[in-house]
Image (cartoon, rainbow, N blue to C red; front, top):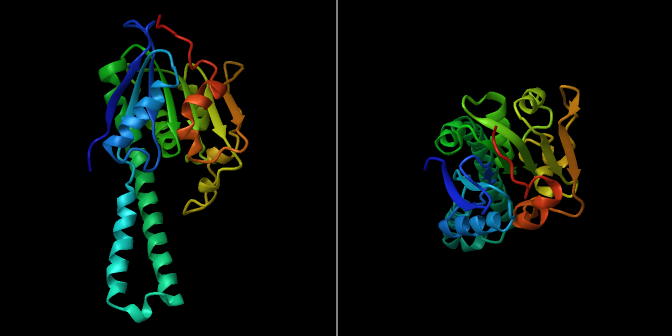
Length: 258
């Protein structure tokens, strides 16, 4: 499987060598081809986020894997015409595809955590000494969580983190530690209309459907929960240019290191 990589997106005109870096981290199956990478680059550029922006491309599953399972079943059924449309056959199809989807999601869930631990090394190549903002969608939020919880953050300065429809665990005990490693705030953007997170394989409670508990750092509230109504799971990513400035006030505000 290809290694994670940072894909340059854009630099705002006001950015100099000390300007901030924004890292956008996609979720499950969001960038499975170069065409989708280019669409994502355009989407991120359209947010108008100030500073130097990158996409983290980390190969989070492919739609063609599920298609392969379907094709194998179809080939088998073509030789067994009398059983092709039987209730038992249809149930078996649904079960096999569902099991494959659950297994792939859990595999990518584990991969997202490994990528979170690898990301600091990539960031040190482009952002040492500069304020970094992390924007993670779906499993991308899980990357952010693991990075802040257990990553080696030496020579890195993290400002804000924005979780969009996050597939990170709501009940993780280390959220206060994660928030404390930010110089700014953690923005948790969630929606009760997110049906995808509602049916993830293990049915755990995810931050993308619930508000995070407040965390105080130096007497200041550092968690901002923003509920979106009528916004589904994938729409948090496809409508990124429209939504990001709404949920993250600093989106288009330039900041500089000391």
